[in-house]
Length: 116
Image (cartoon, rainbow, N blue to C red):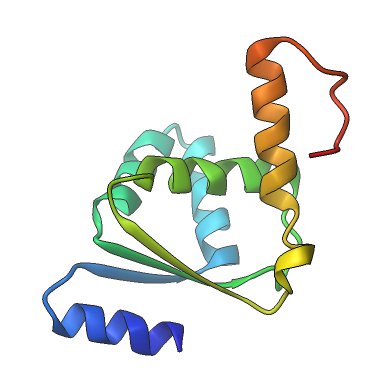
């Protein structure tokens, strides 16, 4: 269904990028290592529709989840994201934890627990 959505959007003239979640995270990790993270995130931010497939198929470590969150933040309120996952919504906890940590760290409050 995600591929069909992306195909229809592309046929309607929108710029579409389809990527597997693990491939995207691996690319982001490599870009960070090569000091090219901002450029890579900006590239993913320019497409009209970013289709991320198989989120949850492989567990992401904290660093990978934070990098993926940066891509989503770059696109926030500008362009669309479509995500497909083999996990139920209730099990998609990686973003809640990452966002909660980021909020706690930026405000300097909280116990630093994983609870969201």
